Length: 161
Image (cartoon, rainbow, N blue to C red; front, top):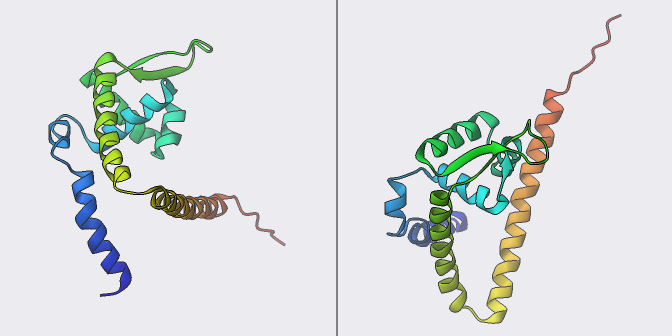
């Protein structure tokens, strides 16, 4: 087994406990992971225009709109008008949506605290440095991929003699 496969096997075994705890079962029957992610994003932003939300979630506008439509129907998100520009539609969490995101944050923070508590100060610093380094690497790959896509989408001028 190569080191990547070994890391995968170990990470998968432990991450499934973190990513799919029993507490998520009740929420899983109510909404999708994309819907939860959308609600957590709206919670962080407090109020967001659809374009802003689409950018933050890295979803196409059509996907973000579909997710928001479902969440509005379920009563977790509401649409309204921007105070600064009445033409802009903004979305925000309803009280029901705020309660779900509050419960989610509490659960996630409890898992983080459990992990944090078993590490000493040096290990915490090392862990954060590793997470920062890996995240920066992923971000760089995404930026390069976006730049490649922009270059492919540019109009090319062909000189005709």
